[in-house]
Length: 140
Image (cartoon, rainbow, N blue to C red; front, side, top):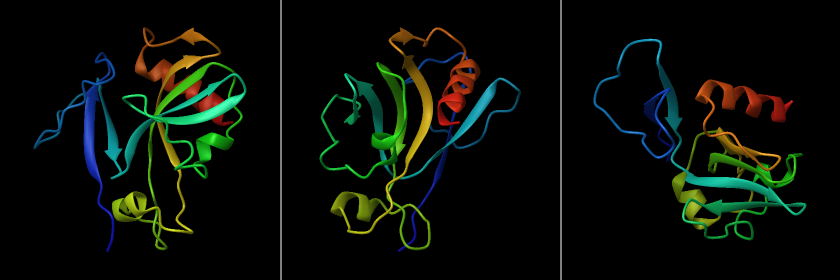
């Protein structure tokens, strides 16, 4: 069974946690759109040399998702990234069932949406676009 995607949006001035689902898309340059990929919204953290994946309510998920790409990323110490762990099926589509069941051989990418801390510095007061630029530099 194929995965599903939903479109979420947030105003560039909105803080984390204020994403809302709507029936129609707002117009204008101040809106940014993100795909909801049918995964687990998580935080990718590197602290004390150890990359980890935790749920948004701080439950450790690293053991369950040891193959998630963020656990192998070369991030500066004390960095926190907001993202989503998604299981991709053999056709490359999101599969929430495979994510829940821990299907062997399932690809588990970490889709990064936002940078919250970098090298111990809080960056949430910067604009979302600035934070995303910093995030893209980490991926280079």
